[in-house]
Image (cartoon, rainbow, N blue to C red):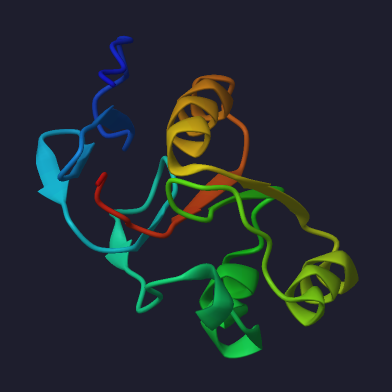
Length: 126
């Protein structure tokens, strides 16, 4: 899936999602990552939704986005309840979706200048 929409210089966006990489601007990523439109992508040491716990979301909560798009991989799965509660307590919206949906939604929200953060759990296509 290639996403093609003009983006201002200096803004990070998801250029494409293929079977073997997430392309952020011109850089392919083959690992889970955290992404905002303003901050360079950073590796996120989470390999599956069951590993998302309070420690894993701590760096996300510190950034205080308005909404977090949590991509659970290629299939929809939800994080543990304690993680959902952590976002609720912090007043941060949490949307759980597939990797493909999160890629599309991130670019739309970023283009609207929303304070969005994508927490993308990388999973290559089978």
